[in-house]
Length: 294
Image 1: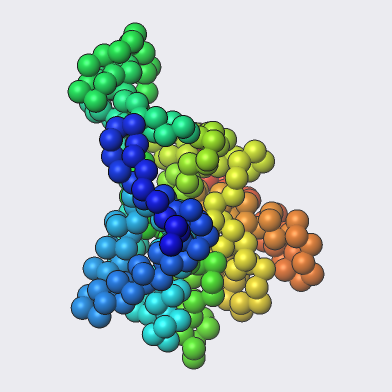
Image 2: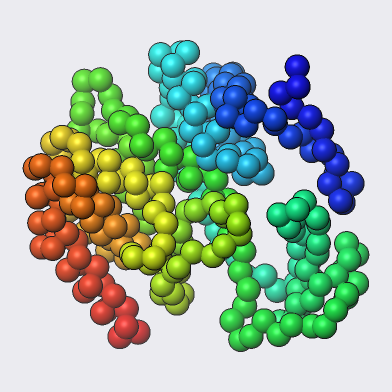
């Protein structure tokens, strides 16, 4: 019907290209949701792990995965919390790269390779043979971030209120945000232009996004939506976040609270400004000052 076509990359790999991206994503999410339903009937946690791992190599996999869970819940009327447990178990990792051959695609679809070995880096062919001068990577080892899709799926999913019908205090979206909000680095996709985003380096404690000059993570957006709601347990949630001592969670809370009070929503805006000034920002400042001592 012309909705997809095949395309051969410069490296001779064949891929499938959707010609109607929005429709493709919806159809794909529906198919993934069907497979997820079948797997969850046998082992819901394993089904969640499958979802996060399988979509880690799919463009917009976080959006597809979240929509797949919604599709499953819509068709079945329920979905198992084991899927959430499975996704949470795939904790994102930041690994040093000592010796590796990396493959990339430029915006034009051309494939190129980088060889990293013993603190040096150079352009190479697919066999690792040097094609150009070596580049010194400096004293800091290079790193690669992996296994992020599972938690990014949860960030997308947490934008929807999730609770038991008879117990609004046990909000699954709030539980998700408390956990993934402590990730030691931003949970963001690479943008279409390959441009970097502004971060603050916390040394061995990871990175956080700049308050003023960086995009907002979907998990932080979900926090802002939670703070903008009329949920009656929001103060207790903020207290628990402060008690966690996580600088990354507090940093995301600051951005979320600023987003809420800048929206100018009555009641929530006043609450967010007070929570920011009197509770969360002082806790973050104290944590950063403590970090500087070490």
